[in-house]
Amino acid sequence: MSWLIKSSIGRKFVQSISGLFLILFLLFHMSMNLVLIFNYETYNFLANEILGANWWAIIGTGVIALGFVVHVIYAIILTLQNRKARGSNSYASSSQTKTPWSSQNMFVLGLFILLFLFLHLYQMWYQMQFKELFMIEGARHDGAQLVEEVFSHLWVVIVYVIAFIALWFHLTHGFWSALHTVGWNNTVWMKRIKVLGNIISTVISLGFILVAIAIYLGYSNLLG
Image (cartoon, rainbow, N blue to C red):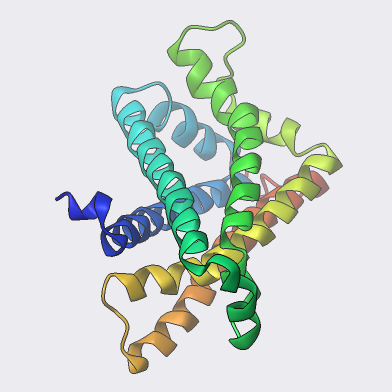
């Protein structure tokens, strides 16, 4: 198993698997957020009863956090490795081949998303599950109301929209690149995988953006 850590192929494989795992989490998270638009009570049940400070939710949070940490660490390792390999030819190689902008800026996009994640965790997860778990005063048990308060500020909505546009660029390249690394790299399937990646990336990003804008404009809880 040491090849997963020491070899370049192993590192790319771990990076790809952790990325695909995080995409599945994003799909789940986005789907749960869409519930908020239609019914506050259902969202609160999911956020507080199912995903509150319960042992299964804590384990799930730990697994997601581990996947994210692994993804970030390996992204840093691979970026430094690639820059060292290219050396002074990095600019020349990028000018000779037509590579997508997202492909050239995956690390920068990832860094921006990471900074955004810190804000998101403080605004949401820290106020609910973390405070409840460590019995900190002021823990929120009304997840829907908290989300509504957060998105009542225009600057927050703008930051979220920019962050999920960045996420879209990151995912459109990351999805097919990950499947390419794990072996789905023939010419026939790769075209279909790129289309599927664009669809999934768009659904995820637009889903999060839709919730933020809908709540800010007061269109949430339509069926509540």
